Amino acid sequence: MAGKYDGQAIGMFELDSLGACYVALDAAAKTANISVQGVERNRLKSGACVKIRGGISDVKAAMEAAILAAAPYGKVTAQNVIASPGEGIDVAMEMTINK
Image (tube, rainbow, N blue to C red):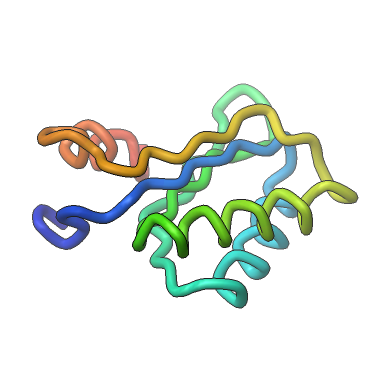
């Protein structure tokens, strides 16, 4: 995956329900030109953390749509957008995906 997301913004949101995460991802993908970098299951609960990538305006639009769509199905426990990720962040993010 190294280099695949160079220069792309990062959107991350965590929900307390895996089902709500998929509803949110569906809305995000239909709203903007983004890629799903990963979905990490929460080991202690039934939720998950979702990481999406793309241009900053696409990521912001996708995040807004995702959070709105997921609201009836689960609680948002965290959300953030990193507009211009620093060097090395992709290595750290990849380390946690599929763990």
